[in-house]
Amino acid sequence: MLNKLLQLRNHQGFLKYLKNTSWMMGEQFLRIIAGLFVGIWVARYLGPEQFGIFSYALAFTAIFGGIAKLGLDGIMVRELINHPEKKDVYLGTAFWLKMIGAFIVMGLMAAIVPFTSNDATTNLFIFIIAAGLVFQSFEVVEFYFQSQVLAKIVSICKVIQLALSSVIKIYLVLNEAELIWFVLVIAFDAMSLAVSYFMAYQLRKNPAFYKNFDLNIAKQLLKDSWPLIFSAIVVMVYMRIDQIMIKEMLGEYEVGIYSAAVKLSEAWYFLPTLITTSLFPAILNAKKISEALYYDRLQNLYTLMVLIALAVAIPTTFLADWVIALLYGAAYQGAGSVLIIHIWAGLIIGLGVARGKWILVENLQVFAFVFLTAAFVTNVIANYLWIPKYGIEGAAYATVLAQATGTLVFPLFINKTRKSFFMMFKALLLIDLLKLKRLVKS
Image 1 (cartoon, rainbow, N blue to C red):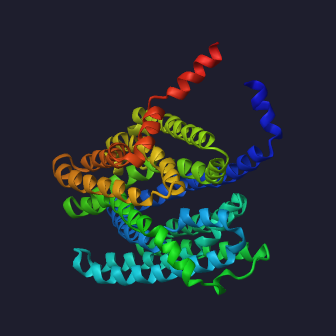
Image 2 (image 1 turned 90 degrees about the vertical axis):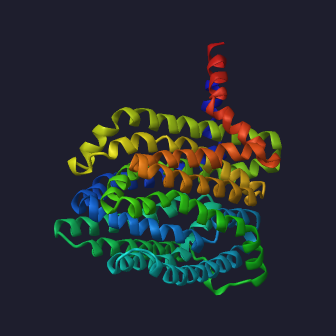
Image 3 (image 1 turned 180 degrees about the vertical axis):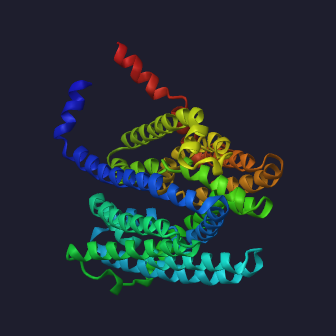
């Protein structure tokens, strides 16, 4: 085993993916540090009530942001890998589809917002943040770099955006700025990232992708992605509906307390996404070699997700109250109990992220929509029943239950996805890890 590990030092494919993952991990660790030092500083400065309004506006916009993405993220990477000679047409077509989607979303929000109980100021915050959806169109550049295993370029762009955003937020806190300025920073973040993406793409002397659009490719992309469009809507709703319902049932103050805990609980979610994004090309290529190799790599990915989640959840369970007091202060007392519950949702989320790649490879997107719908319905019902009874802790319980329902329970009852259930269950039992221990002892 030691010899095999040493041989990896000279394995070009392994080194390529290792470097790719390292760049993304480096960028995400910087983002976590910025979140701890800047994001939490902002939360402490605003206080639970204003932070609750801010979090509510972000959650409301995020629900509609899933529509603007049009479910193209994973599909575009797949198509760029399979058809590299058509990259300009694919990028241009996806760019304009996303642009159209952003304007449709803003029109939809304009029609829905008047029926909410929000005041005029909160609605203004929502539309300022929503304006940044237009700049999501430039995410197609990130898809191209992902397909080329060039995370270094994407990471540099994101670090530039993160640095600018952090400096501005620090300036606003030091000058005791009003809440609206922090809202404006969110729209600025989307714009600055889009500009850095576009400049990075141009610096590599690539032709202008926005000059291309192919109606047939657009139809094919939408045909493949429509289940993912609805899936994106459902996943954002059930990931953020808790904050919306807490505001309606309990108020902005409770949203602020709950959001502080969720912010910490979700801080490590970049790891499952980062690892699966980096390894997606390798998993896809393994399928071309053999089904056995393909499923072997997928099983290893599931097991890795479980190990990472346990490494985060177990210590957090014992240190949650202390961490909340240290980072947020006495004003956010009560967030610790939410964090203890919510952190365990990550165990299921990691498996769901990995399973999502399998669904893309197998072209089973329609089932992803079914699973997410089940999770969404479970979350709404559980929130409705538990928030009045258990408060914000009830919303945390509802999140864990919804994740388990959509990721583990429902796939068991569908023939085409039952295999994924058994692979995830095997990973939860750490069967592969136990085999490895026996192998080492022998």
